[in-house]
Image 1 (cartoon, rainbow, N blue to C red):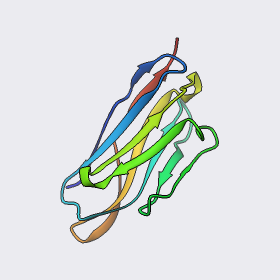
Image 2 (cartoon, rainbow, N blue to C red):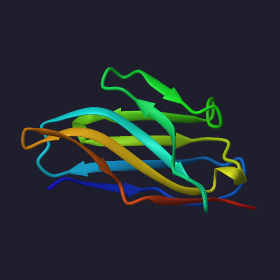
Image 3 (cartoon, rainbow, N blue to C red):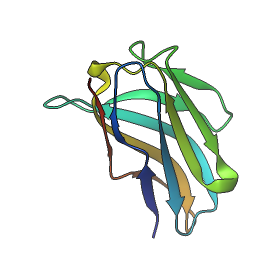
Length: 119
């Protein structure tokens, strides 16, 4: 079975960087689009970054110019480099990946990484 494991959350001060990583394990034959979602306390989960199978990427206005999404399919991994972090970036971050496992497309979620930006 497929599992997405996230690493890299933590506590940082405003202005500092942090990188999240998401690694997929299991029976995987191909990857499609990949995304990072953000969930603030008490609010709905929202997409903040997207990277297509082609490598094209897009960002929510709130993170544009500060966050960078990347992928390394050779390592079955997705990354989110977060620079110039702000207190309002605090919350849970989830990776979300489309992939083929055992002949079928599916969408999978990571377990979530807590990011706290505070002085």
